[in-house]
Image (cartoon, rainbow, N blue to C red):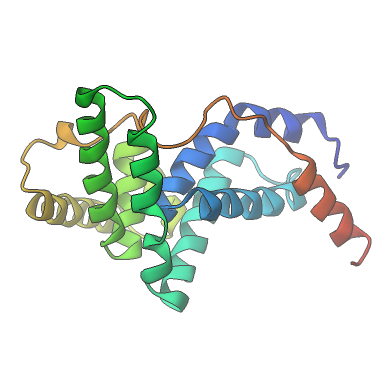
Length: 201
């Protein structure tokens, strides 16, 4: 496959911001999210011609990689930088109402990071990505029943921590995430790494 494959480049350009938001919810940090997306896109690039649903492939790759990292390193590094990132976002000349909304989202994300990795992945894919249960089950390699039970338990745990009742109070659109949706897209790092792999470096 050529690094300049138009289909792959178009996919990255259209989907990168969405993938970055999902990765942020899975990781809790902008830097870790960027690394996670790049790693998943590298894997996709290698299999581009064989993958029928690239978005599903990347979501599955990110979720599984994050679960694996959690098991290896634990939760401490997942929480690093979250509070500072949200505080910085809240201080950028926002109104008090918006600052309050951001504070609520801060609490939600902090609570989310306290969940077991699979449960967190289910909630992110179900309520932020709005994926059907069957797709989540396929992405995580589990049954639909497991997805349902993990979602139910996850929501119950978030409610207990946050002392809220309606699911609708969770930030379903993630518009207040401290991510710049207009940030310039740079596919070069992925292409450079791909060339290095092909050249045996």
